[in-house]
Image (cartoon, rainbow, N blue to C red):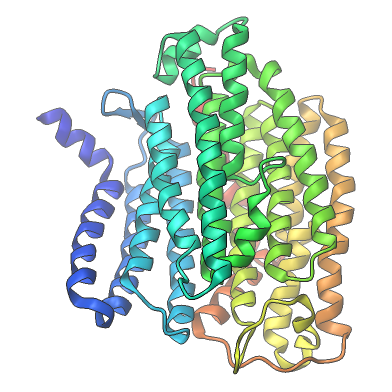
Length: 482
């Protein structure tokens, strides 16, 4: 009984969200649509409170829970806090959109809440079973969210496509997990690490590849990216915002925990797979973005390319690489939330617009929004001295220190193509003839876009050292015994 209480205490954020979900599910079911607004706002508050609880529970080293199925350390704390804040802000943005579209429902927020619970399990997973449970708990909620607009054929199609391809990725993940278990004889990461020490068997390496393929789907890495542009375009824009942020940070940390944990001694084997995913994602992501006319599809291709840069850092196999990966993903979350806040502000009297040409002349009709979007686009392109430049710099330095200089050079060349993609948007915003003006943006959209842009500016000098310090501490958690 004492062990159960200590385990639940260590998992205070998860326990709090489970209790909140059960209570609000009943409130939403019995209250109907009139309770939809309060339920969604309550979930935003609950997610923020859970994020605060994650900081309160930081251990000195690491703490295993439920027989070692889950682990609490600085890496999981970083992942939980980032995912919960991203989920809360995404739902906050969604509230105004759904209210305007007259589609506000309690189910939307509760699905976000259950997906967030899955993410918390993912970043704390310490064996193959908890890994799979976390991934599937997140994914099942995301499938429904993608098809949440039942009046839209595009939304239904995106949900079905995501579900079918997601089921395929789950099959790959399960097959890889079964091979790893079969050739190592262990489900726990510590046992797998002991079996993988030295020269791993061919069956274990094949299992790693299949497991990586299944997880690569969750971050839209090429060639497992096929669903991303269609789902991003077809899903409601707030759902796309959510897909682009919280699930990405949870999945990338899960991949890092698997590769830097039980398979760290096999870095020379899995490194080749990660490099291939990285190169393909950067190249195909940016080349696809060049041809897009829909801004949500462009953001999908941009997300694919950004995951390629994150994988450069992961391919290094070092503590510096893991720190650079977390630093890059932290900046990615901030810029992506800000950009999607600007996209959600692209609304006219007849409804949302999504074409890139609709940004024409925004500098004259919405100068403040245009400035914020321009700063965010310059940052995600890696233009100095904005914060996004330092994100790519840390990624490239990790690759150089791991004798992967050619990969860093390839990433820098790909950044030039990416700069063209983002500069095209900036040119349309500032130099094209004005299109029809947008209706006034909501407070949530304006504030989130403005704050995200300010955090990317050189004046926010406190952000970079603080984030760099936190990511170094989080990365060190995976190398305590290494």
